[in-house]
Length: 279
Image 1 (cartoon, rainbow, N blue to C red):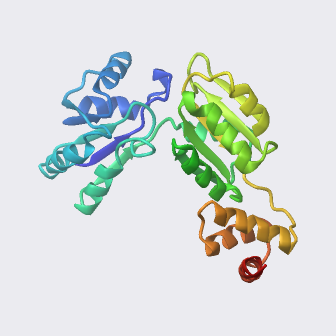
Image 2: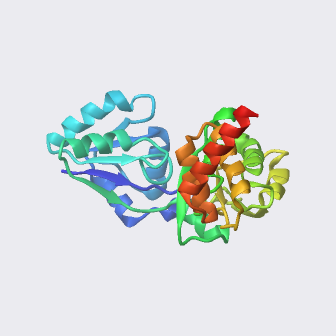
Image 3: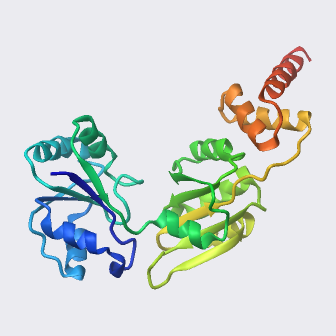
């Protein structure tokens, strides 16, 4: 029997798929991030779980994974669900999937609601190419370094964030991407008070300064390709290096954003640093 990853509603229980209802009713074991929430979901869907329900979350997944792998080997059907959305996507599950794959055990998926795709669709920003960056680091310095690394990313970016950190994160994005970068903050998706705020990052940061409530997904437009002269581009490289990025990687990022040669940027950056040390 396979390991089944099942997406659960991100807000409205009626978004549950018929496949999820079926899997909840037939699994031998339901591994749930929060058993209380999963039981409430089952009640809302009118499902009586046939199998045992056990906790599987970030604090016990290392210990429970081995047990679940043995159950799969014994022929049991294991269903993995989280509080909302797809298991293993910024939620527990990756460790179990990796272990099942390594053990050559079957893994399948019951697709369903996705905060990432819904936020992208509602953002009004380009969706032909995008990058999902999950939750940013909580510490200000680490968050700034990650955002500096993304400053020249050309794809639309999607982030998850806790409501009490949203204002600080948007302010940090203004510093890294500029106040004029288009973005959207999606709040309480599929729920009663669903809200999508669109606008430049500076405006969104001002809006969030007084506090934000609910589940938050932030979508930010990618960097626009700009024609840059070599000295300006070298200063961009130096700024990235100053945030802890390797010179080679910084040159690659700026080259992607500006269309300049990586080699030309690297050589100019090295020459600029040598001149700075001599001077």
